Structure formats: structure tokens, C-alpha cells
Image (cartoon, rainbow over the protein chains, first blue to last red):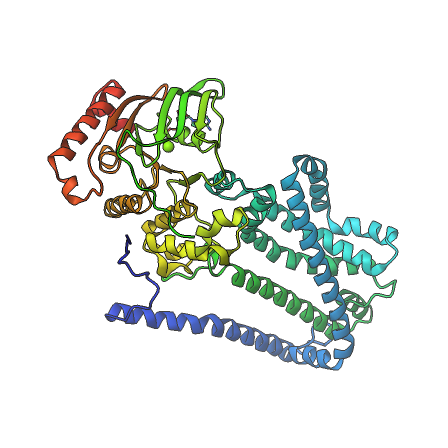
Length: 289
Length: 271
Ligand SMILES: Nc1ncnc2c1ncn2[C@@H]1O[C@H](COP(=O)(O)OP(=O)(O)O)[C@@H](O)[C@H]1O
Ligand SMILES: [Mg+2]
């Protein structure tokens, strides 16, 4: 015997049927264009305004360079700056990767063993609440390799949001689903794989988006603390160096690169999050409004 | 794997599956949820636990499901309890939002280590039984409330369990969807011969679905009356409007009221 459901899912696009619908569709089209166009217009206008102010007031370039000069410096110094950007990016991404492994690993450990949580959670909090600028000098004293020291600083800043969010996510599985796992006699491992980890995914991704930005901040701050004494070569080092030489255009160019990197990291994590959740999670589901 | 349709024997000739003997359940040492609760389940039974909110219906189901232990008394399975003996449907559909319909139904198999390919025929068979074969690859959020509930029922049925527990499964649905699902549930029962304990606080639902109604009273929760609805299945709209149905509903309603030891007002204020 078969039971049929005569309903069709509301998935297919409905044909437009009246004025209201048409108006609604039009306003949506406009909005989708405006979402890209407006920021571009605003950025173009402010760059033009910046350039105009510098030109009209004849501000010298060692106080405020115009956007044209910054761009020119960026191109002329590209070989130096790109190398430095790569170093900073490398530290940021490695710190983020270790933060993911460490954060998720610790979250699973805490989830599986309450004693482990009691033992180590306080340290995670202490690491988080102590400002990195005050810890970094010590790290540079005790850790021989400068690269490792930088990595450590960036990691300390980045791992906590991943740990905290994933810990919360592992605990937030639906209680009826948990009961179902018990009824079907799932092992601890099966429960983790089939229920807790998928439940934690949206929380983890939220943490990842925060951690991506923090890893960059951690890397930059650590470079500042390390100063120009050693064999530094990251973007923050370039900014410090250019500052000593009053090479303001290069400071701006390096700053621009840092900002662009931050945006790229944010967009990547957002994109990853979208693709992992788009099929099922409320946060990624598009709705007609 | 194919559907094992268990022929349903007449009441009185069915082999016993499970027995609850004088079960007590006390929470936190003081809240007496169940006192001397007894029931026995026979193969092919459709039993309703009927009673006002807070009379311990869910507690009884959770005890049978092994999610809690009784404070006193015993729950005995004939021939012992295996991992595949139970299917459960909760008040919410309780689906994994990250998994497709087919993979949600696959869950009980997956947990016992079967590969999807091995059981996919069975999964599709059960999905077509609940009318959702076209939605095997949909995600739960694309389905209506009633369709999600069907997936939940399919998941409970898929392993062909000896006993299916349903805790007010349709209470959150609208009246029309609920009636349809009630009809479909009876068709499923006829098709599979499954045994069901169904928790409800609706007199009409219990009379329409069950062959036995256990009326429960609160404080402490216990079974105060057993009503047999010895009407043939399949039951349909004709049964819903028959004088027999009305008489059963009347009797059940009276039993519920005297179980409450009070008036209709009190029944409603607890329902
Ligand atoms: N986990 C629990 N802890 C404490 N009290 C509980 C718990 N579960 C149920 N109860 C109490 O037991 C009684 C019966 O609850 P329940 O079985 O959920 O009733 P029903 O399903 O019939 O509405 C209620 O008084 C409820 O407050
Ligand atoms: Mg209940």
C-alpha cells in the first residue's frame, strides 16, 4: 500500500502574476546591482576626495601622500612589499591552520573528558584574556626561532574563538537526536562523528571567521613587538622600517596590502562557510522577503 | 531486504512482546511520575496511552526505550531486547538537518555498520511506503511539517523493529495534516504489521487508531482503565462517522474524566 503526498514543494519559481510581483522583482534586481555598485562608487568618491584634498592644499607627501603616489609606490616597491606580504600571509595562514587543529582538537578533548576540561580550560581563558602585546616580548626571549615565535603569537590570539565556539557547538546537538543515538546504541565515537561534529559545524565556522581576522592581527602585532632588530621581513616590519625613514608613501602602500589581505581572508572564510552550510543551515538559506 | 509483513492476529491470540510490571519512577527523590504502572504489549497491537499532560506518558515511553531506569519494578522483553527492537517517533520530526531524507532514514543502519549501498533498496522501499520516494535527495528544510514527520516515521520503520514508540507525534501539526497522517499510519500498520505504542491526549485520535486504549491518571501516573476498541482495520472516514465510533469516544471520554476524578473543565485545563 502506498501513501502519496499530493503537495509539491515550493521550490520551482512561480510565474509572475501581477503588478505587485513585478514591482517586487524589479526592486530585487535593483538591489542586487546596488549591492556591488554602491560600495564601488563610495570608494571611488573617497579616493577622489583624498586626492583632491592633497592637491588643493598642497600637502607634502611626507605628511600625507595622495592615492596616486601610494599606488605608484606600491608598484615600484612591489618586489619588496610582495615578499613581505607573503611572509605575513604565511604566518597568518599557518597560525590559523594550527588554531583550527588545536581549537577543534581541544574542544573534542574537553567534550569527551570533563576532567581534561577542568584541568586545561582555565589556561585557555588565561591565554585569551592576556593581551598579546604583553606576552609577545617574553615569547621572543624564550623562543629561539623568530618565525616560530611569530607563529605562536598569532596562534594564541586565533585559537580561542575556535575552541570556545566548537565547544559550545559540540554541546548543542538536539536532545531528541541524542536520545535516538542512545536508543540505537551508538558508540561514543559514532555519536561524535554523526551527531556532535555536524551540529558543531556552524558554530565552528562562526569561530573561524573571527579567528581568520585575529590571526592576521596577531601576526602583525607580533611583528611590531619583534621590531626591526632582527631579520624581520613581514609587512609590519616594512611599516616600521619605512616610518624610521619617513617613507610615508610606502607605509601607506604596506597598510593597503594588510587591509586587502584582511578582506581576502574574511571573504574566504565567509565563502567556505557559505558552501558548507548552504544546503541545510538557516544562516545560509536564502528566503524570499 | 524486503518488507516483512507480519500478519496481524486477532486480539487475544497475539504473542507478547513486552511487559511493564509495577513500575515506579520517581524524579529527584520526590516527584512521583509513575506509581505501579503496568502494561503488556502483544505483537500487532496498536496501543494508545491516553491522559492529561504531566501524567507520565512520556516517562513511560522513555522507560520502555531504555533512556531511563525505573525506580522500582521491571520492564521485560520476551526473548530479551536487541538493538533493532525499537523505533521511535518524537513530537518533533527530529531529523538531522545536514543530511538528506534518504540519509536520515539510513541512520539506524549506519549506526549498526551497514553500508548505504547495501540497504538503499530498503530505504527507498520505506520512503515509498510513506509517499516520499521523490524526496529522497531533499534536505529536511525543503519539506513541510507533515512530510518531515513522514520521514521520521520512515526512519522508525526502516529496521522493521518489534515495537514502535510514538510520543504525541502529530500534536504539533494542523488538524488536516494530522487526520491525513492518522489515516496513513493505519495504512502503514496494515502494510507492515508493526506494533505501536502511541501517546496522545486526544480522545478521538486514540479511538480512531488503537485497538487498545490505556487511560492514565496523574499524580501519581498510572493506568486506570483499559478500553478495547475491537473494530476491524482498515478504518476510514466511514468509521470516523459511525455510531460505534461515537460510542467508543463517549466511553473513552468518560473514562478519562473519571480518571481525572473531576469535570470536563479540569480535563481541558490539563490537556
Ligand atoms: N527529567 C525529569 N526530571 C524531573 N521531573 C520530571 C522529568 N521528566 C518528567 N518529570 C515529571 O514527571 C511528570 C510526568 O511527566 P511526563 O512523563 O513528561 O508527562 P506527559 O508526557 O504525560 O505529559 C511531570 O510531573 C514532570 O514534571
Ligand atoms: Mg509528554
